Image (tube, rainbow over all chains, first blue to last red; front, side):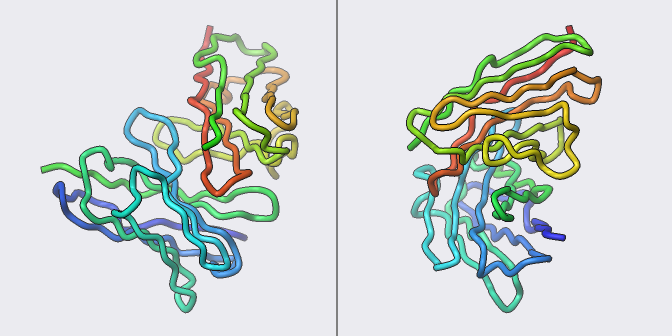
Length: 115
Length: 107
């Protein structure tokens, strides 16, 4: 079964850094595209970043230059390094990957940016 | 970026009603559209992928149609468990975009 599980969220002060992890099972992260999507409290879904099997990466304008997506093939894990965090980055962060023509999502990890 | 316009934003309906939600893309996305159901505090759940393919385990009362720029999610007979928020999402380009959501409420 294809599954992804996020971790690493928490409370962080503005300007701080946090690294989210997404552990994959049932597939190889290097062979799939993998994406991060976030949802601020009471708001809709917002795409954050994506990494393709060929290692191309893309970012939403709101996080470009502050967030970095990467993967560790030996650990079969996806990461999101988040720097210079702002209050508006407060959200549940979801990891998602393609499975045939569908998309598999994790349960999310909450990031709260507050002093 | 491709814009996704979803309507209505809120829908009041009764158990047994036929419900239709529409999603319009600002440019063609072929059939790369997914529909999600989300309940409070939970992750989005895939209902439909590639515009009209029913995700495994999803009841057959859910169906999707459309291609290009116009898409529809239909619930043939609304059940108590279906009261939730629904989102469309295009994944034709690397920059995924989502509709604003449709909250289905009890009438």
